[in-house]
Length: 478
Image (cartoon, rainbow, N blue to C red; front, top):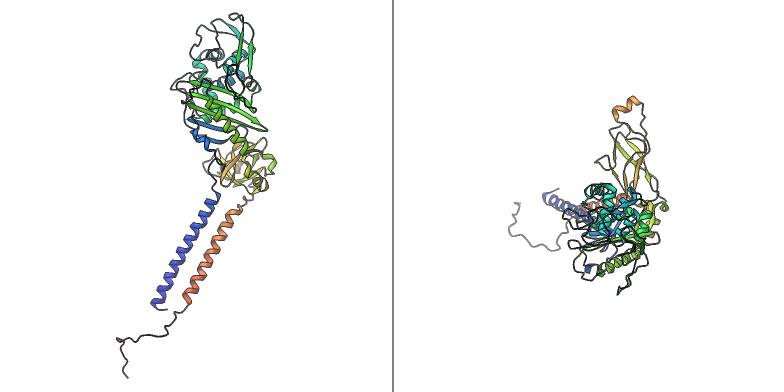
């Protein structure tokens, strides 16, 4: 092989490498853009009107699945105003006796909205609950806090403990009523978590869906109280010029302060799906009742109900176990139980049929709470111990999660021998079909390129039909 032919082969080899790299990138790009979704949440196009919402912080949440269907600054800290009372109410229900008589203290809250309580007045805790949630009585909220905990400060401690339990990581409460305080804040997402939790309580649901509640005469109000719900999705007052009644509305609470602007957290249920809309920070609405928040919330509800469907995971026929690697133990793999009972996924309607028909092909991702490594459980663990969750992916997006628990007790390696624990072989999880298909396609293209390069290298250069004499050629001596 002369130098020219070698140089040609080298050039063809470089060309092959370039073509292979180019095709590899293209295949990856096709996979990437093929899995990308259209503008909006989970591929659902967001209505143009959402851009005109005057609320600064907006979030739409599906309660059963825990799915966020839409958000605008939904994870940023904001002032919640009287929507704070959602947490105050559920604490009162869970920690207090609603039939207990409460005596109003000397320090009656007079700032902001009030139900009109007087010092020394006696009424049931249940009536204070209605006064706080229906007419947004700040005086009722303070009375509840002092009754449950003895003081507003001590009640705030309980509120923040609830926040931690519910996963409200960006919330800090300083009072039970939401009066302006720079250290009193939450996020639209956090308040959606609190609202979803509260709406599981039948008493809470009954209170926030009540149009009018009547309190009989007390020792300080002989005429009693007539309390009308400020949530216009639930109740239209006689002097309201417009009606915002919404047939699917189920609650919850309005709010309005100078710092917070006009706010609302409201819920609506249609079929099995219950949506929670949270809107904070509307500083532009000058109407008395805050009309913008109702118009925006209804648009959010319509968007959710029209474009998403709630799917019961138990109906998909999925396996209730998954294999997982184990570290620090003689056992190298184990089987984890998947809790698919009472699990729901909120899925775009356009994807529901495909997911039902191809549920077994959903992507899986194990997220373990006791290990930093994905798909590697760290010993020791007890049988039945909660160890994390399993994420199900469709088009590379998580559509729902399920809790994972261990199926057996696993000891650390230094404990296994003494305990006589045997190693159990477990079949590794099946490789997703799209993974081997991708590599097969790439390998096939690579083989074709190599064959083409070899064929090009073996071809002899074509001689010119007519060649010009080289006048500089040295003639051989005869």
